Length: 329
Ligand code: SF4
Image (cartoon, rainbow, N blue to C red; front, side, top):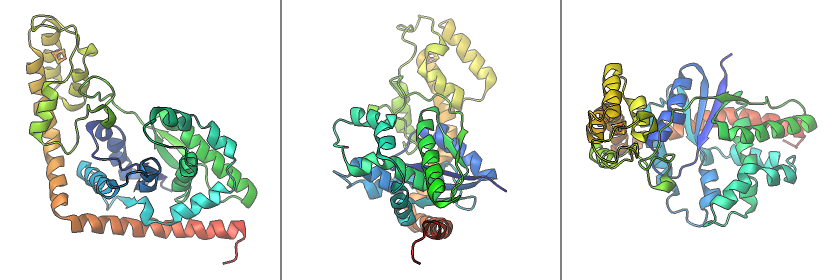
């Protein structure tokens, strides 16, 4: 039987090339030979952004446009919005019955987030319980595989523990989801740090070519190349990480690396070559995105159809849950 995969993303705005090269590239591959459920987790976004939810609806649309533009195919995977399938909230409530408070309080990500997002009041009941909702997201579809980056393993472990505890009390309902470790290429932002909306250093999937070029032009390079005549080292240059992802012309890469090390080329020459490859990859993606943006009815239809498919699986699980718990039906 095909492995069932669940993965979600919080709608917090337009996605960037880091998302595209990391999680989304893996999702696109997985849809070919796995039964995939990809969910815009809007309840999770509300947990941290409840004080101003004015962008929530638009952010959901943006993320869906980005997903479809980069190649998620509704004929190959189920694409939906979490709040459209009310069983996520129902299962989260059921799982919260068996989740010890100490597990949530000790969750390292919870402590980190509280420290990192000090401009938001996250001392809420919902935010403490977000791993429970996350477990519900996965377990509702009895997903056997969950793609995770290195830093998300703790979350998945908590989902597995919650499943185990539910099964202990009520019988074997949930399989324990396994981590699907995926490789993610390094895609730094324009300042050399990790690409992130909050650092203001992103190259967005939706950025028009002129905008992408403006950002690339001023992107940080190897600091040793202070002047055009100073030799550099591609391995110390964030632009080179982008070259490695976008530029598949081995001879050109060789030439550029040599030119960098000998100061035979300037950084702007190197960036121009990179931009040509970025443009080649991004143009069809952006065309698809524009087409969908102009046809919102198509987008709505995809999401409604996705919710219908997701709900049909979710309902079966919930019937099993109510039966196992012993509720009057
Ligand atoms: Fe970076 Fe290219 Fe400049 Fe070398 S030539 S420092 S790889 S941008």
